[in-house]
Amino acid sequence: MTLLVRNAQTLIRLKMRSVSILSLLAASAPPMTNLRVLVVILSFAILVACTSAAQVRPIGNTQGNTRYRVSCQEQRACDAAIARTCAIGHFEDSFKPGKPMFFDFHCTSGRQSYSEGPKSQSVQVAIPPECKNMLYGPDFLAAARDRPRPDSVPWDPARAKAFVYKDPHSAISLSVDADGRHLVATDSSGRVLWVCNPFEDAGLCPYRTPHPVIYEIHFVDSLPDFGERMAPYLQKMGMLPTHRYVQIHFDSSQFGLVDETSGNFFFEGQN
Image (tube, rainbow, N blue to C red; front, side, top):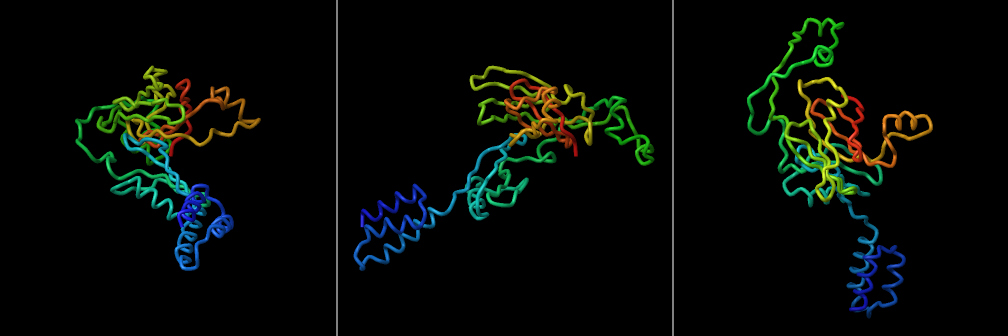
């Protein structure tokens, strides 16, 4: 019986196919009086060997709350992995069906929305004349033309939060400053690699909110296609396929890629 159990444990670790399991267990089968034990062990070995465990990994940070991605073959495996990761609860950001499938999620505990927490005293933010169309709407539209277009609007500084995202592959830490605009990269020894202000460096105008701030950083699976037609354009922008990139999102729905090597920001769009 000891040999039988040892064989079953070995097969579970190696995830051999059920045919191989049956062959090995049959070779060390106990007397018929222990057949029921053999059937239980065999069933368990086949179940474990044929089931792929769900994989959970951190993929980003949303103002201090880690964003995870879980991938699995069966949804119940993903659900179990999420339950182990989030003790209190979770909410899902995105889902990709198929096999393998994946879910992106945050744990409920510790996440704050913009409406939570203490409010600070609002400050007036100046709106540059060239940015009024972006914030208030194009002036050639009647609805936007009749809307007030003040030179400054109130903004709550509490919307800006400092947080850090560490890329597990490069060990580079990207820290969002307390102003919600500046991004600082440091290596594993704490040495500062670069400092940038992506919003101002790209010359962006405020959209949806008078003072957009960074609220999320996450890794990207792949860069835009470096095909023959796109490669010269992307490389002219300084995007090299050998570099690592992360995507940052502002609370205005504006987003883009940041080169971890140089700190260059490439604006991708807004929703």
